[in-house]
Length: 146
Image (cartoon, rainbow, N blue to C red):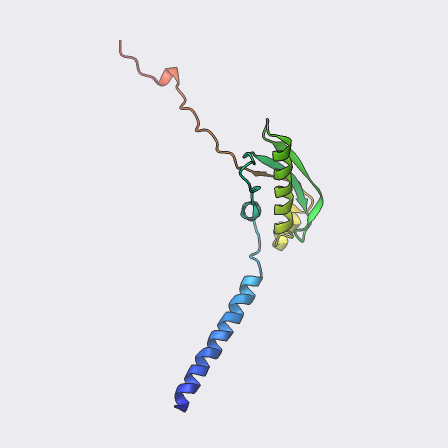
């Protein structure tokens, strides 16, 4: 019986070591090395305002970061879908600011942090469905049979 206990305690200890190493690895966020990574991270934090009465709209915020990935200055809303009501605009502005709070500071690599520090980024959050592009017809491509 004793050898069985030792082997089971060995496996339990090994599982605990594995779990602890997995938790510490997941606690450290993946470093962002490109602008594409930055936009993907910000969009992964985006949560549109809940509620059946909120109309979908697109909103763009201009934000700057320092080397450590913290927000530098005040984020500025530069675009909102035309024709949106005041309550919808406020709900989306709050959702954008909550997204920035949830995501920051961003874990920049040293190179990206130095390159991006102080530069404004325009981040667009889209919730409206875009209409399909109309098929373009060109007269010189249409064959005519005389």
